[in-house]
Image 1 (tube, rainbow, N blue to C red):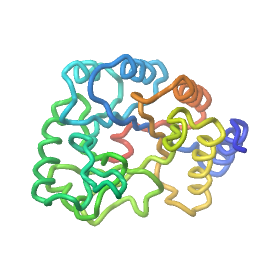
Image 2 (image 1 turned 90 degrees about the vertical axis):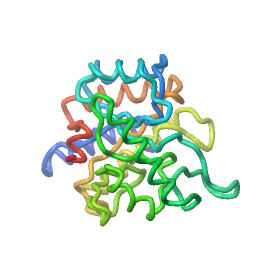
Image 3 (image 1 turned 180 degrees about the horizontal axis):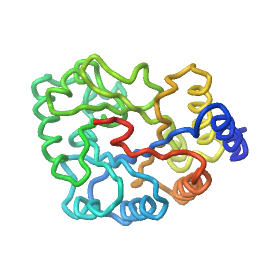
Image 4 (image 1 turned 90 degrees about the horizontal axis):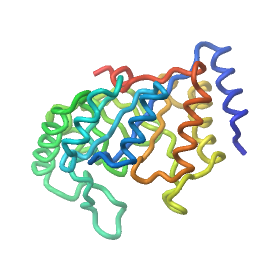
Amino acid sequence: MATWRDLGREIEAWTTAAAPPTFWWRDDDATVLTPALERLLTLSESSGVPLALAAIPRDLADDARARLAPVPDHAVLQHGFAHANHAPADQRKCEYGEHRPLETIRDEISDGWRRIRRCSGALPVFVPPWNRISEAVVELLHACGLRGLSTLGARAAAGLEAGLVQANVHVDIIDWRGSRGFAGDDAVLEQVLAHLRGRRAGTVDADETTGLMTHHRDHDDGCWDFVQRLFEFTRGRVTWLTAREVFAV
């Protein structure tokens, strides 16, 4: 059972070995300025933890764009185009798999980036909905103006043959297959510890920043409480990087 004490010990092990571990924060599915999005942005401002907001281009409203402008060190990433599922009913949900002509997909992603780049803090990084994307679509991203890719799980390498920098998230705080609420301290801390320990042991890419993934629209009280406690627990003990630092684009 993973505990906050375990996390403290792991951070101490990093500090003894070399330097404090690095983290980054990605929140998905932004569209309009809801109370939940306002709470998210306020949390970033009050905690001093930089936020990378993966926004859905088709549905991103002007009020959300305007509210983002004063948030320190934020970034806006491209979260697909419409967050629409195009996979057959017997397959896992996916907006950018091998289910449509590549020309259609290229035009759609390019249109999405044109919309996102109007935002303060826009960063040319693609976050595929459901963290799923086919290799053929990855190869299109650079031509669409994108320079980074972020999915879920430890990356195989930082640089992709398609000319992109990849930096993923590794910690999902929501129990999607069960309660669809907070997954619990034990389960979430275990994800944090697994990636940190893997980086320190060299079983995953040690240079990949440990990524926290949140979904403000789906948070219950447990989710909000955990994120705030994580930020408080790690203050002064780890380094929270901006998305611009993580992707260097």
